[in-house]
Image (cartoon, rainbow, N blue to C red):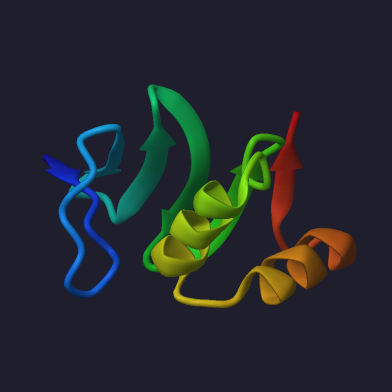
Length: 85
């Protein structure tokens, strides 16, 4: 199943950003056709090196993961979250 990402309350859906959901519990965030981040069973599992490309992309990752960018950085530094290059 594919859904257009509209994670900001009151904002218009952005057709360039989408979240793909798989019945197995996996979800992936894409922005302009580029894979940005992924989760399994609502737990952040990876980000690509494009996750902090811009403030807007970081905001979308934060909404997708349900946590601030600082937490994502901490998870990358601790190895809790895989950074794909």
